[in-house]
Image: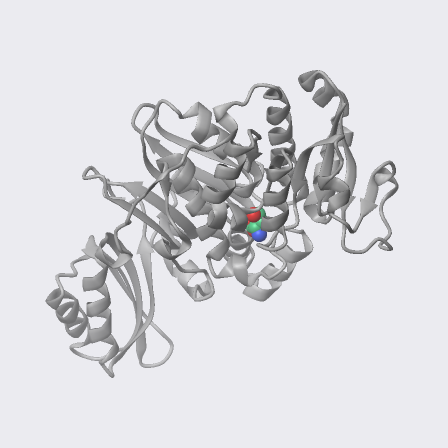
Length: 429
Ligand code: HSE
């Protein structure tokens, strides 16, 4: 029998347990032996546990797991950097195989942890850290291994996709949708992680490592969240044939330069990523052999995340006794990605303007001064003496765009309500 030590028994820990119990026969058949949780580390021993967890020994002392020779695999689902990082490090040093769902720890400490895993000849797996239940890590590591990856475009945060979908489809308020995402167990303990784009940025650092084989740090990812996106922005995007998603973008150009960024993005409704709703995640990959490929599925929640974790447990068991390269990342080279300001995009601009002679001329003249060319423009009369102008620009370097917007902001006859990047508009993205 394979015995697991579980670090954490919250939502995700319960999901892992449920999958192991519900699919015990199938898992035993795949592994050739039963797999069970022997001990779980919890904060509060007095908290009532479900009857399904009978047979698990609960402890507040991690040494009960790390020192137990019967436990061969440690599954970490505590979340957050500490104490998870130190416990994972200790488990590897104790020659335990480790499976973790912890994007923050992997994003920040990947090189140290994989070096420890290599030194101690154990596996370190992290499928659940990106994309919830979608097997994207394994697909990049194994399924797409013969390819050079050219682009990775991901909706990687279930909470923000849930909020944007609820605003778009049900006209829900931001905070109501966020509260629902928390209730359903998608959101982080501190939902700032989700809505600020930080959670997505951690996941992009991991995809950069696995997909592009480069070692980047969080401060090399320009990230923005969704807190500035209003229902009006979404409705305006809809009018122009787009939806808005929080998109993680990693790409390598022909010259070998990398770009890694996370921001709200207008996506044409005909693009496959536009149909990804609610807590679903998706990763759109461009690979030089396969071509374009879309992976999608539940990106958050106890059972999808539990499924990804248990898949790593099973894969680890397949490799017992043969220290496979599949479970230990080789060292990756460091790169200096291009600054977001030097990259090109199309942009969506929403303006409220005085409905008077010459205003449109002012807008086009100031944008033109910065080489910002207009691809699409709609003007709508509002109730009072104002009008709304919606613009989609042609491609323009981001720094030029910012300069043009600064000029517009100085004008008293108009107000810049929103500026949002447009994705997938041509081969540059
Ligand atoms: N809070 C995360 C999300 C959980 O909403 O996607 C999965 O990483």
